Length: 252
Ligand SMILES: *Cc1c(COP(=O)(O)O)cnc(C)c1O
Image: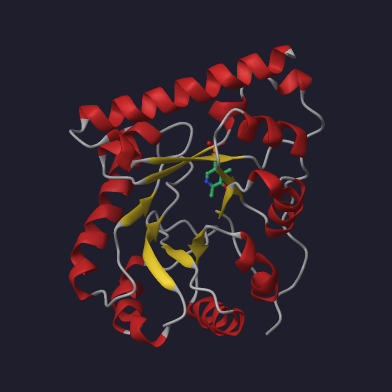
């Protein structure tokens, strides 16, 4: 077995163990935290190695990249998580492929997801992305927009809104990131009682390589980990995926 696969296996084991230990320290059930491995940095070949090692929760931030990897790996039936911005003109193609969409960031996108889900006979699981840190460059609802969205949840009956997602601010490390995550959890707690079925607000997707343990301490049920899984194997990896912003425009 190629050396990078050994390294990959060690990295995955280490991340999973750290996540489980963080849950235990927080007196939480380790099985209540799902580790999503974000494969956006790596080729199909490396993503395939991840599923062959038995890890089936995979994340991508760009819909087209998710489509490509989903097609290549379909016979492994991984659970795909879209963690980045979804343009409305990509909803139809993305919905049947995804297990969770973490990054629903507008009412217009909720409308489109609901409309297409009804047509396709699906009941997709989605999370509302919240811009907790207020950075101008970030997607997501502002925290003060959420109560209004929750009031209107009944109108989206073909999707399940299962919780909230956030990204901490780039310069928020350590205690500052923990504070972002605490705020997301408090926002969830303040709204959960009003959420009508089939929606529920049980999921909190927060925490990345640099701070997933902190996020678990604050109640994360899903952490999205990329670089910590792929560190040290770069020299063997095919060229990195071009991560420039998507140029496709939204259909209005
Ligand atoms: C890339 C990405 C991650 C993973 O980030 P790492 O720091 O590499 O763990 C998590 N969430 C989102 C939304 C991402 O785009």
